[in-house]
Length: 427
Image: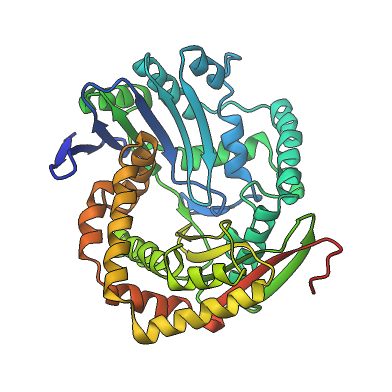
């Protein structure tokens, strides 16, 4: 096993990485003299991976299994709960499930090795019984119903349903009350066996730690043999949305909206495309942009407005939204501004200011251990380092951002989801 070390002198950072004989990716960011630690241990398995091939056999599972597994993994065969065990040492553990990842993590200032061992042990030790699985169904069903009543959650998934016809990102990560009723202990064991294999996982650590020691602990607890990595079967989509508008009525004080456009992301220079996408959105939609300042002045936007570029499970989405008295007007104005930028480009001064602001945000992000480690897990999957970002950002041109927006934010591919007040006067 070779531990590779790369120093980023301009940033004052060092990254160490290795791939263990069992296939586990390990990333360590040493911070000599720091008292805090952060570790995340995750699998590249999320809600979108409902069907997969393993040993030549196709498996189809109900919606919500990845999230269900996350809930159940803290239970240990000896009756202990890993969450409580780690909390007892002063650690702050938690977990999350996304469309294409499930990640378990902790912060601590002491007992790091003990907590790391607990993390590695419980994530790779499945323990499910029919009784505990049935009990969890009620808990998750309550969580699903709670999010069904959340306007910001509803407006997001209504947009995803417009943008995607069959891709699982159109569905709730937790599944539905009906789909989770189909999940059994056997389902959980099958999916854990398939996706919680070291070759499909990554361990990222930041703190006053030695990469060699971290790798030795991982090898000791996880074994040295590499298993087969499953191949997710996710439908591809490249067509325009069937519909460009949807609305619902909910208990909100003012209309909420989210507009967005989907596109197929590159598999080549992944980091560069993500930086270009986010910089282009900053140029187009940030509080200092002509678009925002004009619509804010006209009362069409307020400080709730935000934007994002996300790249889940083999697809990509640009989105923007918030509150507005006239979401359709905002939608029309944004497409008009995107068309103007596609034709005229960005003013050079605003482009350089946006690059400096983006660089500042990234440098501040490097101060957060969790941000670095979670970003490193994604980077390990696609072959880049989070510390490569400043150099890539410096080389991005205004023309790249212009061309990107011209390609993605097109009227025939940009959809609008709106939540209107119940019983309101908005049509």
